[in-house]
Length: 289
Image 1 (cartoon, one colour):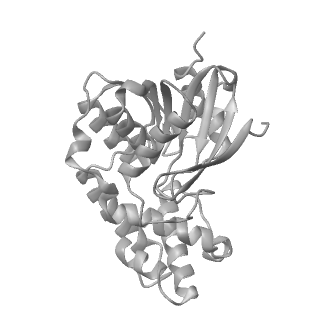
Image 2: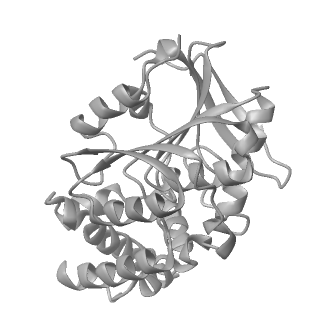
């Protein structure tokens, strides 16, 4: 895959610099890719989900993420601000309307952008969805506590709040131990076996900042507000969802109660880049002629 057609930094009104790249075919259907997280980053692999010749694609690192700065910022970082950033980028590039491709956490940002800026949305495609309603977050938090206990005493943390506190400890060794503990817990459902020592070698300052940001959102309930449920039941979204993704399936059921959902089910877990998901996504988002 070739590199971006262009790239740069967009300055927000509150002092953030959002890293963006432009791919595909300028002049075709504008499409903004929203990566997973919180605390994730954009990846060229997400471009495998669509036919680049049919779209004018903008990928960007959400505030505090990846190459955007300040890296790992939590002071000015919540769901509402992230959604406003999408609108700012739409105006920056001069797009009248945009399509959205939201992956995991990015699916919720896409849904909230559609709620707030319906006039600027052409179509919405979501993969491996995540809805941070209270019931799902509570179940996810309980599951995380169980996983932290099951992977062994890597650190002294037994719940997400304690992991967050350890990640900010003055002792760098305790920070790394907490990071490894968290990563082992998060990775455990995938069946991937990773040695703690191998993970420890990968934990640097950028990883620590990303994990602190992820937990910042989790501990705040992903900033879910009552207004977030005020969706238009006629608003159309297409969802490609893995059947083996427990919280994705719960999230899909929530979306089906609030939106006009076209659901495409595939044999996959919570992985938008699984072959079955990629194949279904490319079929679900054909380029317009």
